Image: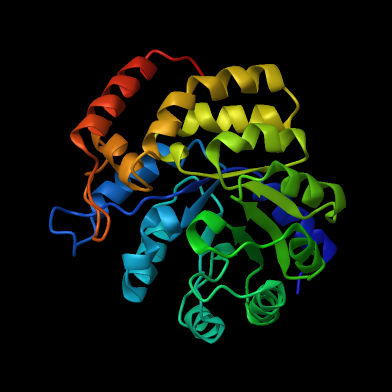
Length: 305
């Protein structure tokens, strides 16, 4: 379990902007586009604070266990700026997740991001016992991930705070869209417990409550501008952070219009970083969204950081 010094160090290095990396596929979507992933890492890596591998934006539900291991090893070996790595490891079977962790080489991984169990809809005690069991057994510290819009499973502020006292749980990614819940967590959490935004456009208001950053989708495409906005907000320069955030509002809203990562992959193709291909049941962006994203990307080409 973590001592106070290690907890403080992790809270520092995992503040700011973590990019939830997309997984590029070739036209034959059974194949990962390793060249595209390398370009994405070269594009985003220098500007963000850490890399998040195999999260929802990576299409984790349709990426196999073997591929997840391959992606993790690829990111480790294509990380010239030595950015910290967080690995997504969530699911709805506690026992399976314990076995899954054992099968990975987690050397070089700072923490594990674990989403609330989906579909089986546990109550608050079930959620507490699930995360406590993972944290008791995992070799790496855990970041909770509350995203009820995807899981139909809401991790309450009270349960989050109960888990925050566990010595191997270091923070929460809050994507509930509920600022009152975030305020309750911020007001009562341990000082070194990370409150992270799971929504790109909520990072600014959450910073005003004591949030320490975001795990971001838009940072795949605009890592420099977006990371600057988050860092300025954390440092209390809300005027600059507001200006930078507002520059990205339209395109950030647009990339989610047809689901994630549909929009961000289309935007990355427009930027020449990787192709837009997704695995079913996800489908490519509509012609209307492609046109909208192309126009917004063109308008942002002259934006200053």
